[in-house]
Image (tube, rainbow, N blue to C red):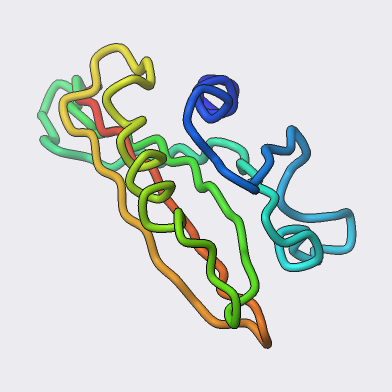
Length: 130
């Protein structure tokens, strides 16, 4: 799913932002998106499986949720005028991302101030019954 998101990001208007194929953290765990404002990073896919129905014959039915986070930041004092439109465009990718069998597609975003930076996280979550 990470590769799909990276490909789709190149097709939306990003203004002064750019997309990096690097992971959002360096080898020491420091967030690259706080070091490189206006650069969009996509994290690895994380998968979680939870039981939905537990049966006596051990043919359990589970829900599996795959999630991928997209991170970027910008100067909090000079927020680009296209920031809200860009976040909306990124969130709109949820219907274009291929995840066969997904019965629920969710996308949420959050913002946080880190020093002089406004950091944005957009998380895509796709749930399917397995």
